[in-house]
Image 1 (cartoon, rainbow, N blue to C red):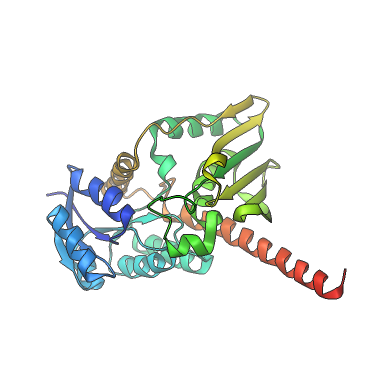
Image 2 (spheres, rainbow, N blue to C red):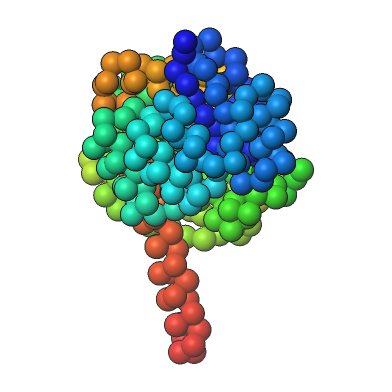
Length: 307
């Protein structure tokens, strides 16, 4: 019998990525689904031949681990309750919308000795994982540049009607992906500057503790013709691009399941994409959001004074 896992969420990502990978994994007993909409919960449970739960706490009591595909604020609350029930955690990014919430989940998982993995999609590509490990070992990087100018909210993307993405934008949706590949090479962030640009683009400058500087441009509202995705590390080793992931999301989620299984079986706490790292990413996003809000306040005050 494999690890019993319950799925929280019934949206596109839960159906096509997490549910598909859980159902296909040979070492997982996909036990059930809980969602906020009872009809969609039943439909997804029927699709994969698992139980539909009306009560998430009942699901926590029946499984060893939970995979979560919910909006970040709802995820954080559910993950904390799941951890208190003793469930290992396979979470989406960002873990939460605040460090208070992400820190509470991280602390509970650590206190109970639970395995945790946050699904930063690119980090579960063997190509990218090898590149990041080698680049971090080599060192000598002065900075990095990340551009994720995506048309997710301006096309018929399956995420186009996501309320939290429309409210929070690229900083909180694709910003975690960018940070997940920059931080392992460039190191922890000591300083954050953020400026808002056209098409709700967030431009970030990150000062890393070692002195390197990274720049990021993030939006979900790029025109289709302006879509651009690039990651480049530069320094004494030249300018080196991040390789293509070379896999589909469901395959990457299967690799995330493998990592969770490893953590459960070995009890090792040093998972590179664990909830502790997820909390670190939320701290950078929170600082960036605060920087944007400070600039907006300054702009309003300047306009009011006639400056």
